[in-house]
Length: 311
Image (cartoon, rainbow, N blue to C red; front, top):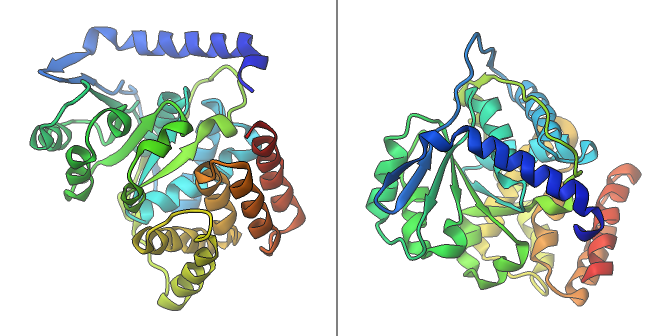
């Protein structure tokens, strides 16, 4: 898929490198943790006090960062629910840093603080203290999931923090090497599936009141979604803990009023966990028994058919 648009791909990679270069003089090295501080916006920054405004602004920023306009606001809803549900997104694809910046600009009015660790890094206490002492509110941790032991970054996720944590990795195929319990804490999002190969534009700056992420769903609603996710057991390995947390995220989106939480989970996360043609066919059958409206069904089936062709 990427090869057919290599010219746009190279142009966007160069654009990304240029953006990284803007911060090159600020890169610091704390032994084996490399830090790129967030780039602060000067001037008045508006404050977001409700979830709908947050998702609207985030959807705009995601579109400007390269996500297809057809999916940018759907992804904004999903990311809101992930943070509100107490989990962390795992952004997968070459555009992960641009998308992390789009999230950070919406939450804190600055680009994300980037942490990179050397292969084999093992000091979880240093990682926790580095994050806690960071000035930035949004921390993008690159390469950790695929390059260091999960025993190093899982304590960070469990640690009570006021930071928004984002993880990233290069390819969805690397998910196969990770232990299943990782999905109890982070949810993968395959960005390459929805990227639009357009030049990133100027992003909207805002600061978001953290209280908008305080939300709950009813036990009956969570139980119903959990039982529905149980139908995936035959071809997707999800622990009960993962299904419970994913049920909450789906319920949060449904309660916003859009009633398409299952669509978001299927498109952005569960689709990427189907690694064989057979599992994708079974996922397609599962999608067909959902009560999606025609437009929503079309949007997810277009991407699933693309994956079936390339599986």
